[in-house]
Image 1 (cartoon, rainbow, N blue to C red):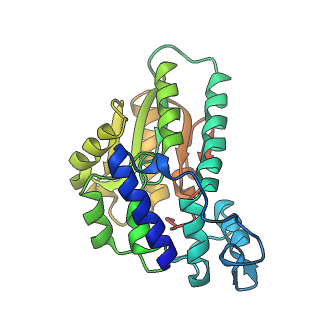
Image 2 (tube, rainbow, N blue to C red):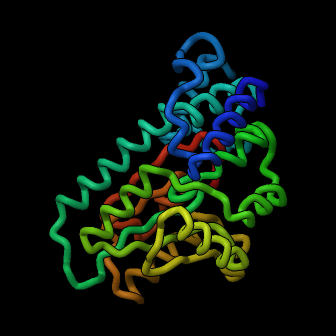
Length: 262
């Protein structure tokens, strides 16, 4: 990670500690995103980093393991800057408009499915310290971060969550985190404002070796066919949160160009 990004992150974190919140203070881009110049427009394999990110978000660039090295600063600037928040806000608003357009059943069986990492909770403090996806995923270091229980909420997702509850929609969290992380995940969610939910589904040993699509499809199928819920919406940062079966009435993809889960 560049010294500029590290200094920016540390200064933001210090200010956040004084105010009791980290993520909401990230409101300004380090510089404007530029399509063809500077770190905002670094080129990789003939494409600008902006174009590469677009390909990732539209699920046309798939199966990648790491962010291209020349795009690390660009991804860092995007994630720590205001554009990431603006993009997330548009998606959260569309999700709420979708719910408002429905005739809710009023029987307690309408649910909304949220992913956890980079959907309800943000791991930006971890990536700001370890780099924005250029190095291969280190499960040991990442799990150590998860166990601190210090992940802040994504502000736009938290707003959507509160609006859904106000309409009588129940919330289910469906995450790729494993059962041994249940307690810390529950505590972390509650500490940042997600105070209630219908279910928190974590990945059990029976799904070891299964793809995220297979695991999440199976859990959504169980929610609908065994538990009798109606999934009115499903939001996540990975396409694997949204593909497969029993995806709900509508799906919503939040931005995440830092990593890919198939």
